[in-house]
Image (cartoon, rainbow, N blue to C red; front, side, top):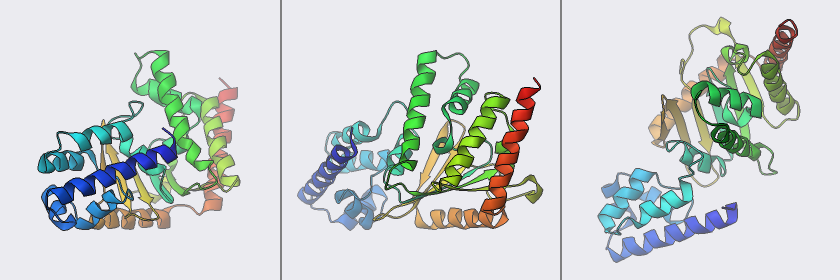
Length: 277
């Protein structure tokens, strides 16, 4: 679905929500209290500024007795089977974010991955699946990365632990290519990347990936991921705590210039290893 038609569909979702809320005699605040979000969020849903999470859409259906209308509409607009259920909404939000900040402790973030690196990661976690399955997942991941090529691309800031640079996912030559790709994006000024070196030792959010997103007309969100599950946080207090931890990571990481030099050095290390095997 094109972005324009997708937005029009969300506007229809919001119009229907407002109509059915008013028919049921609820104010935005009253409906929000009953589905465990603020009245302001209900207003943002109705204006198609923000998209509700699935459990909120389900609670709205139950309260307004809409026979599952909002859940079905949500699934049609967000539930892309190319992505895990817990991640589909994150992909939707990336398309409208004005700023994306990520911390990656073990893997190159999806928006920075090359096709060969993505394939290696997919195969590492799914060694018995078909080539078609892997191809579909890799294609979807590369499509996500197109947001960094758009004229209206978000400001993108990534912090990579040095560990990410050293694991030769897909092989030494492929990893060199992956790091070259990141370096090229940095030189093109499409992204800002810092590296958190081993020498830092213990650090905030230790071992936990996190993605922060900001929007023009909606509050910021934070996404964290665990084993086959993820959490999209939009509680202002929680998002603020994640942002504070991310700020500490920025302070501990190498400056951008030194980070680029380390990325390029790691790429050369992988290239040398590839040439001797």
